Image 1 (cartoon, rainbow, N blue to C red):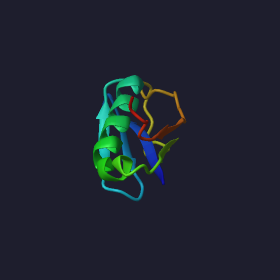
Image 2 (cartoon, rainbow, N blue to C red):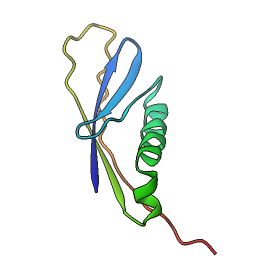
Image 3 (cartoon, rainbow, N blue to C red):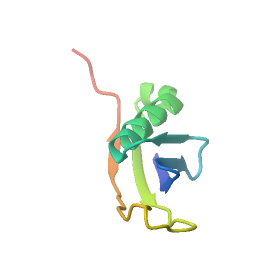
Length: 88
């Protein structure tokens, strides 16, 4: 299953929302946001992951509604797979 997040910057925070699922999260830094996206997705799809379904997360930047001189110009995209691994 592919879960697409749109990312944005607003009022000093990075935010993300899944386009087809009720997952919303934020972080003070891009690193925090990525960690929170992973955690929120794992929690949201816990049962599916436990059953062995692979979850692929993609992110794409959402253009800002308004830009100011302090609006960061960094845009990032990434893709990561979450899957249950066999235990010993």
